[in-house]
Image (tube, rainbow, N blue to C red):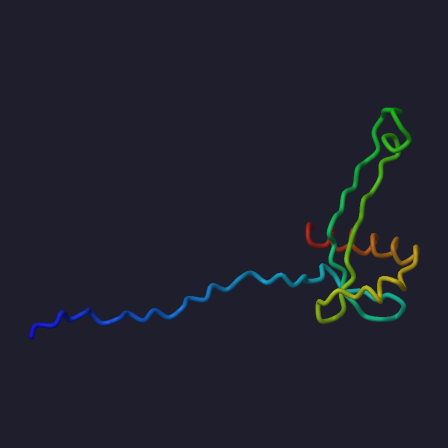
Length: 105
């Protein structure tokens, strides 16, 4: 008898494509309430003052600064965010601007 011979089955191993890491990394290291941490800046805009008086913000300028606090292993640390004071916020803005000037110098 003549039996049809089927071609051998091909076994293809799955290809794993490495996805980019979704883990955040800190832009700079600092301390909050004496606890070492990292700051990942999510938004920064410095708008300089203008010569117009359309509003007080237009004349004096303003800064938008948003960030996420990470622990030393790059994990979000909301518990540490609750310890943040207004003084810390201004200090972090100053540290970030110093960091920017150091990498653009």
